[in-house]
Image (cartoon, rainbow, N blue to C red; front, side):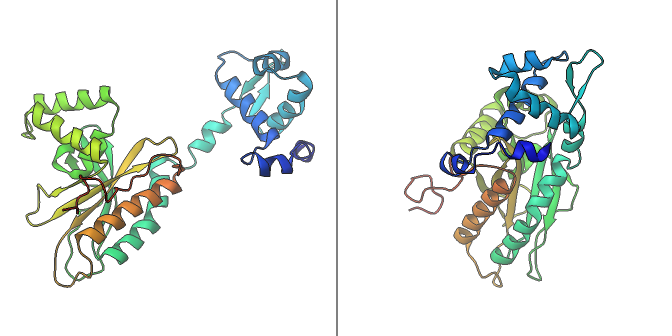
Length: 283
């Protein structure tokens, strides 16, 4: 059956029209349509709902049933199985994130002479899920698994600034009520708005004197910011690279991790434009 479906693929059309694969399109249409229905569906209902003929849908349904993505009820209706759920959970989001980020972050530390860490948001906290040390004998790093109040870190500011407005407002309100001492509402909003405008945060560390945090967003396939890549830049004589080079390499690394997670190049670039007045190294 798999071979018969493959026979419907038009390789010529795929090459000319943005890699369209008609049989795959049909299969995904079927899965997405069935996912939108709370009730089992007949072959006729699926075909009608997709605006396709029963003949077009028939072989797709048989293949999906054979591969375990759907099953047939006693009343000869089709329902989604749990296979998609099982596949999604074979690679939990944080595991997938770390898997994609690890080689990129190792390359970054080697090319920047600085440590770096990857952070996700956990409620009102920033959680360190990956840490790579600088190759230099003297280095600054954070412990894997550490939690920090979200606005005590540049990573947290990047994550919060790119959250949806409802979630952002809810967390800011909790911070203000808790009295964590992270500024007034106006100060917090000004900081988050600036991060949103620039797309990153670069500022003196609130925890370590002399350290500059460079924090960039990491995006998933939808463009949503799911993590922050941060370099705590510690100036020292042994470092071969200055702040500008570290900034640019951190930005490029964030893009590379995002691309590995499915972020598309058609999404607006994370890179700063050197001609913009807000570019951090312009005069």
